[in-house]
Each structure stands twice: as structure tokens, then as C-alpha cells.
Amino acid sequence: MHYVMTGAGMPASQVNIPRINALSYDGASSVRRALKDWWPIETSADDDTIYDLPTLRGRSRDLLRNNGWAAGAAQTTTTNVIGAGLRPKATLDHEYLGLSEDQAEQWENMAERIFRVWCAQCDLTRRQAFAGLQEVAFRAIFEAGDVLAIRRHRQRRGDLLGTKLQLLEAERVCNPHHLPDIDRLIAGVQLDPDGAPTRYHYTNRHPNAITFTGEPVVWRQVPAFGSTGMRLVLHVVRPLRPGQTRGVPVLAPVIEKLKQLARYGDAELMAAVVSAMFTVFVKSEGASDESNTLLESLEGLEQQSGDPKTDYKLGYGTMVGLEPGEDIQTANPGRPNDKFDPFVQSILREVGVAIEIPFELLIKHFTSSYSAARAALLEAWRAFTTKRHWFAGAFCQPSYEFAISEAVARNLLPAPGFLTDPLMRAAWLGTEWHGPGQAQIDPLKEMKAYQVAVSEEFMTRNEVTALTTGGDWERKHRQRTKEERMRREDGLAGADGARDTAEDDTTPDEDDDAEA
Image (cartoon, rainbow, N blue to C red):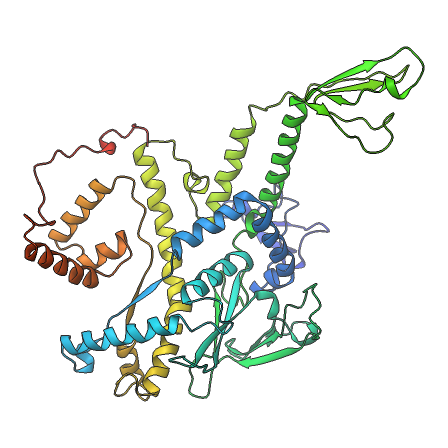
């Protein structure tokens, strides 16, 4: 056993700590050259995030506005997770509720009908339907780390329900008058002794808005829960650590790399443009005269700003005159750079790992084998499905409960025990949320695999329909039944359902090295 004395930069908590070489981690070494100057401080989740959030949000938003890779990553994630909007499939616990299957189906259809009407009227600003709110909320989480949805009541003419949703950007949720954070007030979120939110403080408009609205910034507050215990505020956030109050932008780990990559791309593009310029310099031995300066393009006369004797610039097939005694020196930029693409791909692979988007999907370019491309899509789908389940539980399901609760309270839906018994309420509110289907490289082979899974009872037809098209199998079945009946009534031979099982099963993945 020996003792390691700290230097000036080592935390006091590690002074005179006995170390046993045989049992210690190399990553905790204080003598290795690569680690001896690395002493990060152990702090709480909020201490590690809150003070950096304004900068992280600003840089994240700037990347999503001006960086193609960042914008593509956000849109790819949003498209695959949300798509045209997540849709509910009501699934009552009819056995617990004492309902027959037919009664349960009738109630489910009515609940979904009411919810569809509410979806078109749910936005407090009257700008979007519920699908649009989902997309905006999810993208806001990608950009800023979290978003707030406040439950409002605004009964307008023609509305079926008065429940409305108001989305707030992360920057609007902050401490009143920008007071410093304390134990029970963190970045606009007021907490109880257990760490649960009790109130949210927010501004009437964006606190950093440049456009003058004539209205000063005023702080408001809303309780997190109502008197009945129902949520009034949906704080949609995916905390990464216990005790984390606010969310962090998804791009936070790779902000610097994306910015540097953008600068590198701009520099390479400019170097290639300069390299592509062809300019002729004419040196005159005579007296200085305006005629000695030929600012003439092969494609036509080109206007120059400033003094024509000193304002020189490269151009496409440009001729530039020089004064007596003037000369030029040229440098070959060596562009296009053949190392540019491999380097960019290497950085983008690291970015893809950090944000859970495989490299092939991030750049939307599949050049590897069928098996590799399919593996990339399957890995991406696993991440998208996880995010979808989380978002449905954090935003969609509570919104559905808001609407159905009001419908029950107003006797639009009969639901005995809904307002008094938590178990009954949960049984009435059972749902499954479905979104866009999984991308398929070879639909024929994958559909045959699903067919085997259904025939062997590993999956249900409803699960397969949700995975492939994001639809509702029961509705499709009713439509298919109607179509088949109409075909028979119209005397059309055969049915669409007939299949030739003797077809040759030739698919791209028989050779793993085949190009996708």
C-alpha cells in the first residue's frame, strides 16, 4: 500500500487516499501521463447541466438551422418516430369492467371518434392538429432537451371539448426575474422535498425575443397537478441521471464536431472554388492608365467595386491588368481534396453513434451489402421504437386522457367508476399507440417472414400491421371484407387474397455480399 499525494489540480477529497496497485482501475490512475491532468469534478445532475443549457440550446438551434448534417439527423429521427403522427388504438380491459367484447368494441370506437374530433381542435393557438403538435414537441426535445405542454380550457364555438394544449419552448421556463437556482427552484421548476415538481414558472413570451411586442416580459406560474391529482402540465423530458430537472439537447455531445466539420467543409468548398478559377494577369510596361487595367471577363464585362487599379479578384475566365513593377505569386491549393470524403465519413460515424442513427441512415446512402444495410435499419428501428414508446407515454397518452376525461365528465362517454376508482379509470383508458411502419429493404421476403410468425402464433396480425404500415388491422379487415364482397357481387373472378405459394423465393439477401 502506498499513498498518492495530490498536486494543485487534484480534488481535496482525494488527498492521502490509500491506493492498492493490484486492485485499482487504470482509468483512475494519477500517474499515467494521459490521465494525470484529468480531474473532473463529481457534481449533481443539475449542476452538470443547468448552467450550460442556454449555450447548448443556442448552439443546437444554430446547427439545426445552418448545418445540413444536424438538420438531417433531426428530421430523420422525427420522421421515423412521429411520421404523420402517432395514433391510438383503444384497448379496454373489458373483463375487469364486466363488458362483453361487442360492448367494449362499441365503446372503443366511440372513444376514438371523440378523440379524432378533439385532435383537430386541441391546439390553443388554433394552428395545428394533434399530429402537428407531436412533431413540434418532439423536434423541440431534440433541439433543446425538453418541452412543456400546459393543459388549458378554452371552449370555442364549434368545439366538441374545451381541453386545449399550449406548447412552451424550453427557454420560456425559467426562474422568476432570473433569480439564481436554489434547492427547490431549478430553472423554472419548483420542487417539493421529494424532488417532485409542484409548479412551473414561465414567461408570457420568449425572454430573448428581439421583436418588440409592446408587452414586457412577465412571469407566470401554473401548478403541476390539479386538486384531483390530474396533471395540468406535461414536462416532456428524458432525464439521463436521477435528479435531473431539465433536459439536454440530443446534439450536445457532438456540437463541437458538427461545427468544426461545417467549417472544414466550407474551407474545402472555397479552396475548390478558388482552384477552379482561371484568371489571366496582364502586366504592362507603359505608364499607368485606366486602359492598362483590363477587368474583362471572357463571358462579358464584369463590374468591380472600389478603385479599379487596386481592387483585384479572381473570376471565371477573368483578365486583370497590373501596374508597372507589380507581379503575382500563385499557390496551388490542390483541390478537390481526395481525403475529404473519408475524413467526413469518419466524423459522421462518431456523430451517428452519439445520436443513435447508423451512419448509412444518417447520410441516406446505402452502399454496403444487403445484410449490412438491413442490420443498420434494424438497429435504427430499435432506437426509434424506444423513443416512440417513451414519447407516447410522456405526451400522447396523457393528452388522450385529458380528452377522454372531459368527454366522460360531460356524459359524452358512459364510463362507470371512471372518476372515482383509479383501477376502473386505468381499465377505461387502455390504449396502444402506433406510428409509421418499419422501413423494409426487401418487402417480399420480410412479409413472408411475418406470415410464418403469424402462422406459428409468434405474432398477431394486429402487431404485423402496426409494424409494417402503422395501421389498424381491424379497420383493414373490415375494409378487405367489404372489398371482397363487392368483387363477388360485381362478378369479378377470384379474390385478391389468392396467392401462388409456388413462386420462386429469390431475394437479394441470398448473397450477403450483394450490393444493396
